[in-house]
Structures are given as structure tokens and as C-alpha cells.
Length: 191
Image (tube, rainbow, N blue to C red; front, side, top):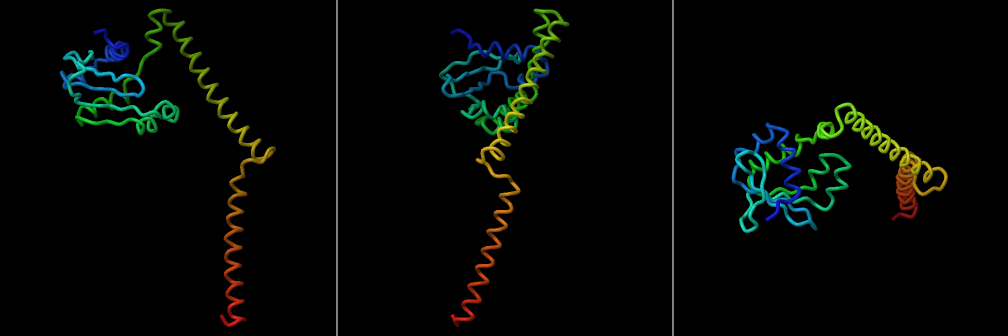
């Protein structure tokens, strides 16, 4: 059986951080299964070195991590939104260790790139990527702001929050005036 490509990536991350391997060593021999429909499940055995290997498909996993369909969009909203899209069943201690690794284990892309390109060029490439990502976030924010302004001012499709508040206040005032008028009519007619 050929190893799943995800195992190489996870072992690469774990191999770079001794603390991460130490976090998994107490769970040697246990099985973790990752499910992300429509992809096939990824079953991993934890080795005594703290690294991972393919697990047999016939055993029962100690921990099942289910990644919901909304995980990719949730990732853009932040780590907390992403965690709400992930279901965890099984060994609570192992789940805590996996969750801790998820929150703290990071790929040092610059370090890996420096082995290929050298330190200076790798730093420049990564810094350029960061600036490009920041520019994209800023451009998306400005586009959203401009579209909202267009739909409020030029092509009224959205209402200003202040206009909505004023409308609700006016509706409340009209309801109160109508109730007072009904009472006066009732007093005059004797009903």
C-alpha cells in the first residue's frame, strides 16, 4: 500500500518540530481518521517516533476528525470559524493533542524555500507573497466598501443603517399614535 500524499506533508511538519512529535508520542499505536467528503478518509497510525504512517483500513480509529463542507470558506473567516466546521469524536486526550497541534503547528515555508533558493532570495519571495496577500485583502475590502456605497447611494438596493433605525422609530411612533386614537374613538363612542 502506497503512503497517502498527506502523510508526507504532515510528517514534514512534524519532522521540523520536536515538540510536536513529543506531543504525539504518548499516543503511539493509536489511529486517527480524517474525513473530508468527498475525499477518501485518511487513516493514520501514530508511530513511537511521533511521526505518522498509513493505518489499516479494517480497524476502529481511536479518533475521528470530520471536516465539514464549509471548512474552506470558514478558513477565510479565521481559526475559530474553521474550528466550528470540524467535528471530533473519540479519545478526548488524543483529540486535545491533535487540536493543540492544529492551532500551533505552522509550516515554515521560508525555511523550506531557503534550501532551494538561499536565505536572501527565499526571504524576498516570502515577503513579496505577504505583501501581495495584504494587497489582495485590502483590494477586496475596498471593493466591498465601494459596492455597498454604490448600492446605497447610486443604485438604491441597500438601506443605510441610520435610515433603517429612523424607519423603525417611525413605525413604533405610528403604532403608538394609532393605539391612542383607538382609545379616543372608544371613549367617544362608548365602546
